[in-house]
Length: 325
Ligand SMILES: *[C@@H]1O[C@H](CO)[C@@H](O)[C@H](O)[C@H]1NC(C)=O
Ligand SMILES: *[C@@H]1O[C@H](CO)[C@@H](O)[C@H](O)[C@H]1NC(C)=O
Image 1 (tube, helix red, strand yellow):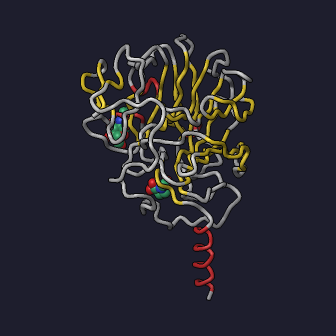
Image 2 (cartoon, rainbow, N blue to C red):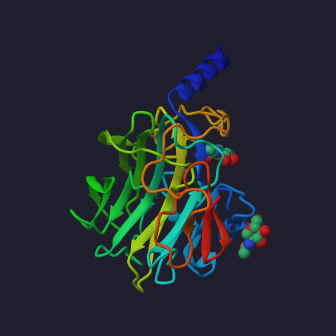
């Protein structure tokens, strides 16, 4: 009797949370050298790592418990992303960004793109609010966090197609939890938000947007405009993409966040619940895309970097020439 009641509780819990269709947890990475195992020739692991400057990976990425939201008990480490004058990639913009490596369709139905952001509590290498930053964005910028731009440069600001929607002051050491609420079918996007260990609440209703992704253009990192010598550190944790309904507890959809008890850890997270991965995303990519055989990157290149579906941007002669194949 007791056992049956427990199972029922677990099933009820699982019905209240979505399924993680891609996890950006840093648990599979014992050190940052592991990010280098991914290459265009050998696309292994959960993240693509090619958008970065010329220094070794350890110059731009670091893992530590200090860099994660402490309320996120599912992750061992968070990621520190560093931007400095060596971090130029593909232009004079400074970029340190990871991209999901997956065969899952990350652009179908109603998905929730979760992440938490913070900066050093002592203000070490604090972000410069006089420079534009694009944070956790899609190539077409239909949804992103910006910092250092109008209307309030000292706020983290949620933008839809570069139009301001919502903002909150960036205070060193505070953890900001976000989820982009993206309806790829209805072509709208909204925002969920909380700080620290508080559950997410919806802070901005969905607005119309050209929602699309080729499942390889969610930039987990920071782009800074323009070149400046001062280094900056940003902390990122709790990255995962969930098929709704949204998990509001802070965690990774795989565990209990603070203050909840019913989300089971036994739910298989690898069961595909979306379109088979051999099918193209149902939504047509919008914004500039590069056709087959077109250039999509390389030294001095400043054009679009997203390939038209189903092609991907391949290093032909790195760092000079990248092509959609
Ligand atoms: C869930 O947790 C397990 C065990 O810690 C881990 O192996 C797995 O990658 C996690 N899944 C997700 C989707 O985070
Ligand atoms: C990083 O971790 C991998 C996998 O555990 C290990 O083989 C490698 O030696 C480590 N590298 C460094 C620099 O610690």
